[in-house]
Image 1 (cartoon, rainbow, N blue to C red):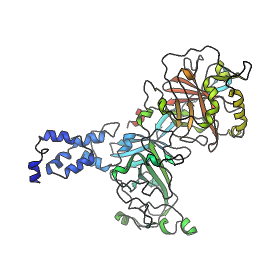
Image 2: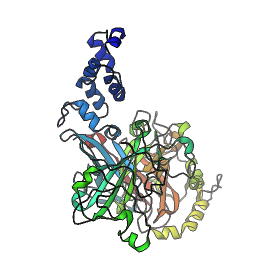
Image 3: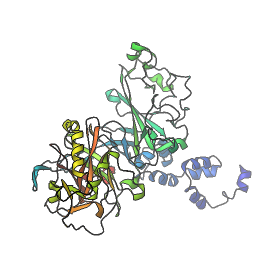
Image 4: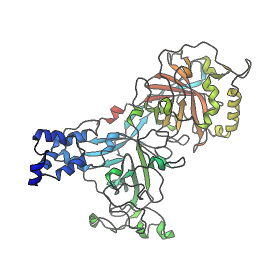
Length: 548
């Protein structure tokens, strides 16, 4: 070592310069440097180096490592988990409702937690639309908050990892090699109720492995820096799902496993999958992997004893969003995460995107028959084009609108009759809008897409709720002159409806009322009862939710 010190140009530098150089290194590089020289080890352990490394992953900077002694210890305690508070927003693939989480670091307990985002409609009042008494305007002032009663995810500095990969199928070589990155981290979020949960790291699915029928999360409708497969026959234990090195750890996805255990005394939970093997005895949890009493566990399992019967488990995959896609700009002021009023379904969260022209995906196939609507044709009997707009609370139609599904062909035929002819006769069933309309100057242009982050039995999470193909002059209809929306631009759009279970989904003509950059309304046209309403959307203040 002395010989190396004599010839090393690095060690001949002043301590201040060495410290400055070390500040550019990644954590693993700092660990490697510490192994080469005693002096470098001392300098690489300095908290002034580790504090910025931690803070670059946190929306709110911290100044103390408590309850730990140093920032280096704090970083190591949550090594490979810092991406959770860094990306903040996480949404799940659970059907049909999904779940939206906000991940934060709690400096009081040095733990990483994620809570479910919830919303209540707020004070509810009704009024009639001045242009159409049959249309009711429902007020919508949502109260958005985090459910702090129960964290969905909690990783403490002393969270325990599960044992090595299950030995139920030792001949299966498809399992990922056992490393700290392939193991699951146990969480204490539900222990008091007999519910248990664990945290799982993910491995990205290469882009070349993603085909048109590949089951992935997030779906292609969402922009993403990485995607993972969200379909598995063995509880996501194979090498294709679990990372074995830090380089393989996805920074944009993770999974949560939850299960119920019935036992008189708590036993150390294993990560064996619940897969029937021996008929009735296996189904009752009386054989093989369904009974755990210290078999195949880590050394800590000796602390526990007793029979433990596990019931079927649930595994949920989560993904994050690139920050740019929900950050508004001058050119794309409606980008963001919004809360919408979905009447009987309650409040739901949506992502509103404004993609660049070159990034626009083809419109859904079942929207093609609305092309004439987008080109400026309207129904002669449409009250909305001769009057102003309003607001109501019902984006996806009423939950009990099976009648609309049963009339799917009738509705499609009616739409075709109303909008199908691109060059109608003057006395035809529809005409091109002729009244002069004046738009504002310098308005944003391009497409606006609204995709559900949380959903319902009709339109589930991950599906479009509405699309406005052009919010600029090309899609402009009018400037609202009614008191409720006075001065708001109105553009053509298409609303997404479906029966229960997302059956027979259709797009219907609608109008997007652009009240402000933080508030929108959607007028849903249509045929028959249950349609012809207006729903509100309000931007979510993410910064307020991120504060402790």
